Image 1: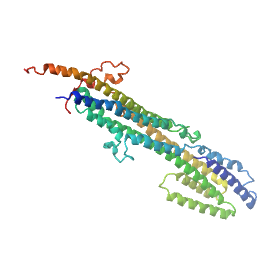
Image 2 (image 1 turned 180 degrees about the vertical axis):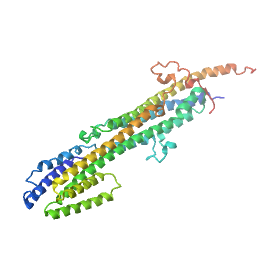
Image 3 (image 1 turned 45 degrees about the vertical axis):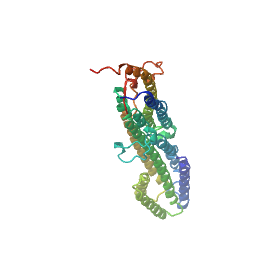
Image 4 (image 1 turned 45 degrees about the horizontal axis):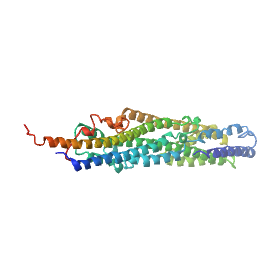
Length: 303
Length: 116
């Protein structure tokens, strides 16, 4: 992702220079530009786009999402996507996990403290452990989705920004000063229409920002636009995009930290507990007597 | 009256099967889920970006990794505790089976005692 933005940025730079030089030739010295004196400003353009040449790989994040669903979420519960309000009473639909119910049935004839504890504190709560783990894995899935969407949007925006800037510069060539100004405004109006039509969607705020800044820049000085006019709006737009990315990334990070804290604070609700029997590690103890809370101490009654 | 003899033996066999086969299989499934989850958390490379974007080198990945680690730790605990539970069921079934003959003998000895 972002790997070809530099070729676009370099093209924009080259196009800006071509147009500037063409304007100089057709308009005479000193009217708009002065013999390549703005080239150093135009040369800044690729550098502005450089941070976007290496973006997180949204496609891999999407692949991780798929793995989360298929290997983790659906194992903990085959119900996918999770229905609204599932936290309240989602039945466990993975037959693999129903083994605890089978064990419960096989112990149905056993009574006494150990069997009762095992049934009440282990088997009966097992669905809740898996449900909590399911919820946690769902949050991980959602955070991957948010991260992927963030960088897909960034990639979309930065390309759109470069494309629109190039289009605007292209509109400046081959016309007289007055015509160029008119043509540029027409092109901008067209872009604004697109931006406004999709205002409800993510990702176009930056393009609109460019357009807004560009309009102000063009109308303020009373001169026809030149490729140099686009540099400051580009900077403004890119800085805005970077600020948006930072803000969104911080939101994701904060949400993840909060969820981690929650899991750490409520750990007992997320894992099947260690059994309270001495024979849990009987292999290590040389198969010694099983202690006081084994099933062997229980009463076995008619089931 | 409780079960005994072959009937009790059949029950114990079922418990042993659960402890020896069903529960370990379930534990393995938790282990499998964890093994698939861990690389996702470890994959910092996918999150890399140019630090001049202002979001660090890997952004929220550290937070994501901590979160995934927390989930993985519970999957691991569940896996290990299920393994222990399976062993416990097997040992309990075996131990109880050992008591059957003695219980029967004790019963035979006192079966005609007069209840006061």
